[in-house]
Image (tube, rainbow, N blue to C red; front, side):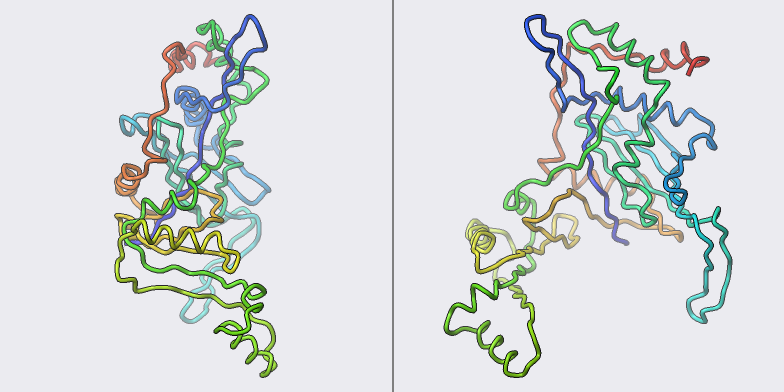
Length: 340
């Protein structure tokens, strides 16, 4: 089993609600899978060579596979990424002998799986070891320019109380903000250890204690300044209790400590790190990989689904607006195929 990391993004398809008495109301967090599905399928319908998009002359993305009915609640797909743009030489690592030379137009291939939850717009993207796939590049890759005018026009014709602003993008993508620190810990099944950094300035104000002894000895030995970390482990009880949560909260808010990190496992037994400073939401699981280091799309999805089912932030259904009439994107594509 190998470790697999997936970034979690939030897709939205903003619309406006018409208001006869005052300014029309923007609904920025609205999500309609039909809209993002149109954007992705427009790209996937193109010939493979036309799906190639290169950034900075060195990072290339190709949408290799896409299935909008992969699962009742999920669409799934696969990017190919290539890191290139410079001449390079590969070597055999045991004897350091050259095995191949790469030109600037050749590079290292990776396959990146992704899944979209149709219920809420959450997009799970496998971490790309080529460092090609980013949130900004996903946004750019699926932005359909000329084609989108037909979608705007049809959506606005079908819906009298709502409309899409034709000067805005059909969709947006953003980072999913993690839950507050203590709420994150509620999903932890086993507590392994707690790590804190003592605030030396605050602790050195005391006239005694371990930190002061270490500082005095360091000064006497002329070894210079240092940073200290304290790790608490081998707790009597691995299960997170109200008392332990209170203790962790004390460490997080006390100015004598900083950089609190809590190490623990979820139901998959994969070690995770929880921190108040976490700015992005990701998922880490374990999955078999082939000889190229690529997981199977179905096996990875099954692992992902287990984690989603146990996570209240991820396992949710966004309220459906029954007033919205969806565009028939299949017929729209057929009718306008000659003009797209």
